[in-house]
Image (cartoon, rainbow over all chains, first blue to last red; front, side, top):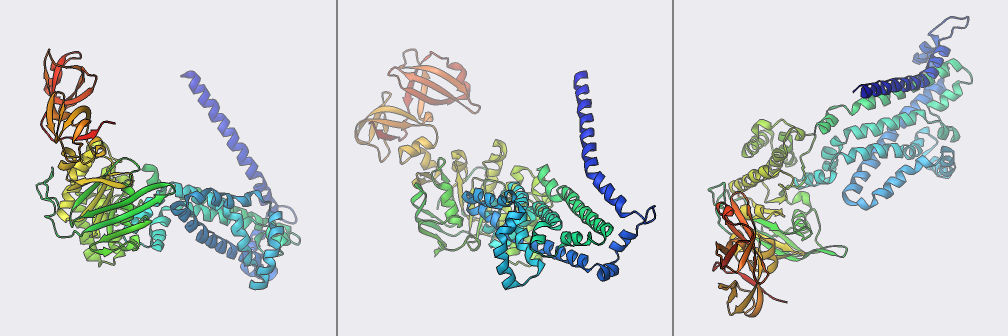
Length: 272
Length: 363
C-alpha cells in the first residue's frame, strides 16, 4: 500500500511538472506579446494599441488592409466550413452505407494533404487558380477551394470518429423503412447524431483557416495573416495585437470544442 | 392460413383487425459474388399470417427479408404485396414496418419522438399523431417511458419501442429481423410472447427471421426452414417438427437420432420395432431413420440391448444417452424425476414409439 501511494505521489508530481512546462511553453510568448503591445513610448504601460485594434472607425480609416484581411478570413471561414461539411458528411455517410470497400481509399485521399507541404500545394494549385481567376475573378474568397483541401485531414478524422459512435446503417435503414427519403435520413437522423463531430470538424477548420498564411501570401491574396504581416511593416505593435487577438480567438474556439463533447448528445452515448 | 392458438394468448391468428395483406416472393435470386444468397426463393404469405423464416447462418433468410423491405435488390424475381408488384418500389414507399436485430432507436429522440417519426413523415395532424403514439406506447406497455431516450431504456424496452414505432405507421407488412437475438434469455421469451400478442391484436402480416428454432416454433403460424437460398419446407410448427420433409429439416429442427433400419414398404424396423415412415422415405433396403429423442421409450432392463452412458437432469425434462450393443448412440428424452433411476453402465431397453419418422437411404 505504501509503495503504491508513493508511486501515485511520484506520478502526480510528474504530471504537475509536465503541465507546468507545457503551460510555460504556451504562456511565455503570449506574455511577451502582451508586454510588447502594452508598452508606452516613454516607458510604463498603455492600452492604446488594443483600443485602436477594437476601434472599427480607426481601423477602417488608417488600416484598411487589416479590415480587408478580417473580412476575407471571415468569409473564407464560412465558405470553407460550409463546403467541407456539404462535401464530406454525405460522402462519408454514403461510403459507410453503400461503399465500405472504398473507405480506405477515401481516408487516404482525405489524409493526403497532411503529407504535402503548403509550398508544394501552391505549385500544384497555381495553374488551377489561373483558371479560377479567369472564370471567377481575383477575389480572395476563392482561396476556399485550397482551404477545403487543407482542412480535409482534420475534418475527416473528426467526422470519422463521430460516425464510428453510431450504427449509421441501421439508423438509416430504420428511417427509410418508416418512409424517410435520403435527404430526411441525413438531415433528421444522421446529422443530429453527428452534432459533436460536425462541430469538431467545423472548429478545427475555423482554427486552420484563421491561421493560414503561406497559400494566401504566395497567391497574393488577402486574409488575416497576410494583413498582419503587411501591418507589421508599419505598426509592429498593432500587428502583434492583431496576431494575439487571432490567436486567442483560435484558442477559444478549440477550447470550446473540448466542451462541446460534454453536451447532451455525447453524455447520452457515454451513459449508454 | 393457419389458425393456431399460441401460448400467452387466447386469441386466434388472424382474428385481429383486418390489416393483413398477402405477400408473395416469387423466384427471388440474389448473389454476392460467387455466393448465392437467394436461389429461386418462392414464398407465399396469407393476409394476417405470421411466418417465421428459420435457418442456419448464411442460408439467405435475412436477405429474403431485406429484399422484401427493399433494402436489397434482387438480381431477378418478383415481390408482390397485396397483389401489387413492388419489386422496384423504393424502401421509403413500401409501407413496411421493420424491427432490426441491432438496437435502432434514433438516439437523439425520446421513445415518443421515435414513434412519432414515421407519422410526421406521413403528415398526420398533431392531435391524431399524439393519440396514435399514446396508443402504441400503451400497446407495448411503455406509456410511462415515453420521454426516455434510448440509453435510458433496457434492451427489451428499446425493442418494444422499435416495435411500436414500426406498427405506428400501420404498415402493410411487419418485418422482424432477429429482433430478440441481442436480449437475454428471460427477456427474449417475454418479448417473443408479447410480439405474438401484439401481432394477433393488430392483425398485420408478419415475416419474422430467426436462427432460434424455439422462437420460430413458438410464435409463427407457419415456419419456413431455409437452406442455401431456398425453402426446404414451409409448414405449421407441429408439422415441421413431427413430419419433416427432408433430412436437413429433421436435423435442423429439434434433436434427432440417426439410426440404422431395414425398410419394408412404408415401415422401417429399428431397435427391433416397426415404425411407420413419412412420405419421401425410401421404400426398401437399409436406411437411416431420423427419430426424435421423445419418440424412443426407455426402460431399465438387465437383459436390455443398450447401455446407459449418461443421464442428465435438464430442469423440466431429462435426457439419457445410451449405446446399443451394435454401437449406435441413442439420445432419448425421459422424465426429470426418472433421471436418478439411471446410472452409467445400466442395461436398458429402447423402444421406438409408433410415430411416423423420416428415413434417408444409407450411402
